[in-house]
Length: 253
Image (tube, rainbow, N blue to C red):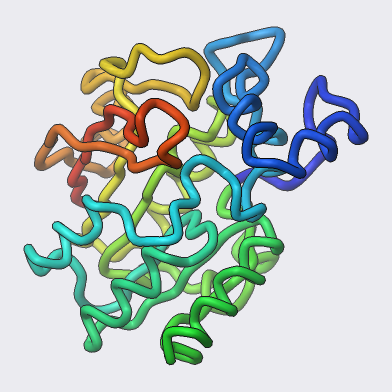
């Protein structure tokens, strides 16, 4: 995610008040506030970051996402694994426990998320099993990143669970470029993002198959190997607890 800033068109006091209850947080998610006022097609990254790590965000369901559990059963994680935009840590902790041979690094730009992640690690007897790192994955100067993210080709597998669709165009280009540096040739990136089939109001950016192929294309060093119907599990009070998504399996050339 991009560096934190004031939350778009919401004043700080109004935003803080809304974040004090699940109803307020869900109202933000279901409204146009998660999109840029001047360009509704673009996510409002600042508002999304303000909601993240509260424990009330619609995507913070306090368990691993179903598609992650399925990837584990398919032996989708091995070697050095990066959870890009890990949030409050449920996916990363699950992968580390279910795949003990994997070395899991979990990254997010919102420091508040790690209060939850570290607490969950302690409760689950998982302290030290995941390397939690606060970092901005749109930062293109490796020297400005934490040591775990400075080395090129450092990871075999990347998990992107509802991170990609939170970026505007500029941030997205920087993020994808950074992933290309971090993933070894032949490595795999799993991207689970909201699809255009989700017609409910509000929520994050939607992506078509063609849109994803235009970003992860051979000319940029990527090959989309598989596209599957998927879902994003949400808090049960919004969209009946589920958003329509696609899971993209992408090979780094």
